[in-house]
Image (cartoon, rainbow, N blue to C red; front, side, top):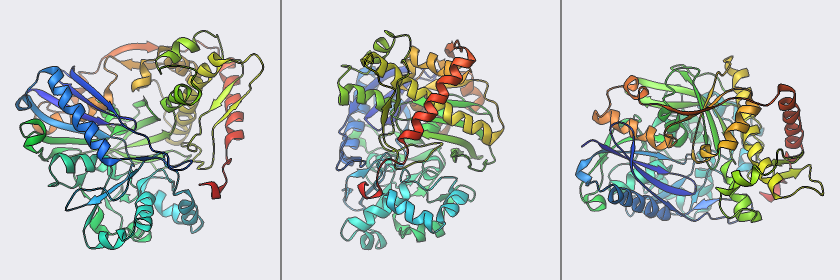
Length: 499
């Protein structure tokens, strides 16, 4: 039993990867699912489609690798965070579509709580800013808008979970209702200092305690899968939110090490060790991982739109046929010629936290064509990462030496070169860029003895390429000043009533 199955449930697709004891990929499968947009700024998923796509991907990955379930030592789960699901405890039926992390429908509620000064309590206890991004106000919205939901929740008839909890519930046939500290710390209900659900916040949001899952370590055996799913029961032994899993998969185990995951959004995490650094300058404090020996913390900058901006070039504007074409198209021009794309489609995350910002394209002239838009979109991703890293450095006092990059868009050489140029620091791509799934596999493997400790895991990490800055400093700073001007023009655009 020397294989680990990692379930990587993301915002636009469910993926399954089979790893061997050396951390090499032996099997892979992916299933996309629908994105549901009931109103501008609202984003939903069908929880049953999430489950079906993840189950099918897992089964296909095993078939592709010709690995029997009995050869799999454990399953590790990593997931899109903050996305909120409520379901019936007896039947497992969701009572509403999942409200996705990108959804802005609870922005007015967040403003009401901010006017009361409750944002200070949220920040102090959870390390998070008060924003519609997190799960707490999404739970409140469901309880307020689904008839009878709050009363049923108080009677213990409903369960809440982020996607990890939903998958573990489904995999175990409804026997296990758990989450881990990394996911719990993203709900805006979890006290990261006491490592427990915060009673004052829970009561202020009027969320019954009976809804909430048990919080267990990120690396331990939670239960076994139903035999019918894979043909044999498999232990579920690892669980972490996608960004924390990527930090673990990048072997960022020591304070000062940082990674950026370029996916639908882009998320930068800086390991800070066993002591939480206070959140400030729009940067969050979060739990990186919960191990048996204790929790580890990180600073995080959450960028809502990264790879999704490239998808918009494909699906919204139709200027590329596939996301892979963006690099080739962007390389046909030497610069974006003063064009800036601000992809604030669902507001701006760190360090701005502007729920009412909206997307903008600025600097267009008659000579602007689709290649300039493609390059400006890649630059926008890199500019947002610089925003976050500058705020992190100011907050932590740590001068970042290098940035480890992963995620689907990290395969784009031009993007990583632009990132190194705009940061003025090296960007390093590992040999295995599937670090989110790899982190989940490592956590599961630790729990069942495949790997002994993090030192052994760190020895598996290998660099594939280092991107060094090539842009002159004066050019870099001029471009960045233009970006800051563009962001200011996109901020506070939407009316509250439009939410």
